[in-house]
Image (cartoon, rainbow, N blue to C red; front, top):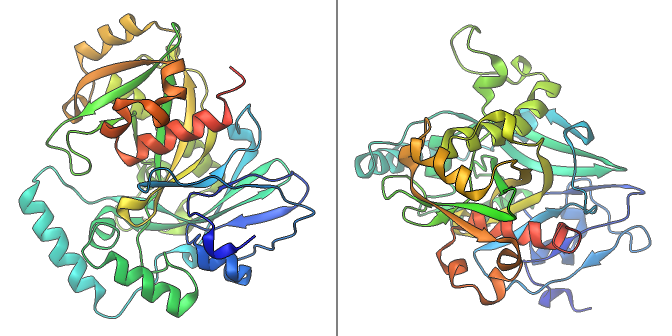
Length: 345
């Protein structure tokens, strides 16, 4: 195979017999020299790769669950360390502050907050480990969403063989929410939100370090040692349920435990990653519509709810007009659901 022609939309799956590490820095260059992947060795006898043409340049997949059942909370671990934080670059904080100030003028709804930063993931047997650092939303706006994002990626590659080294890379979460009458839930985003205004999305947001530390903790900066790994895993899975409750206003008792489908990258924000989950809802679409109309804590983030039949979701990327209206995070979730669970449900 000519690696120079391999698409960045590569979907990776492998046999569960060895440890492999995947970094958001994935690029064609990484295939040319696999030593640039931290902890990753390419052994064809131990690993199976599925190459897919990247139909939509807005997204790519970092990780695809190798099992159609998805990955449960019990199969996930976290390593949290300052080693996985964004690397500082001389003078970049000045640019970050300037970009943030300009964005806040345009959108007063923006607010800063601590976030988890995805460095990479590794699969060891049936256990998926997230290697996480800490970052903040301001740094995300100033790096991933800033005008200099491409320059930062190039600099990171030249300095560390890591295109994401100087980027904030806050980890997001999203839910493919499946109703009792076999429909999936999408939301039309408000024009007031900071990202993808007016686009169609799935319920989602971010796991929050502050939730892990607890509201009763001492005030001040959050430190890595303040956060227990098992509680971070719990927050990763519970945060997606919280977002469904806040955005769609659904009772927690109507939602199943999330299962992890994979990790998608938003190429319009310099490869920012989101963990996509599958969640089953015991309500019908009309019952969901009723709860949505009442409004939840984050009702202002969307203007309407949209239901799509499962069979239409599976063909959405190929021939669906709605695909053009989806924001990148929703496109990544739809693709992951289609390739992981599409043939088994």
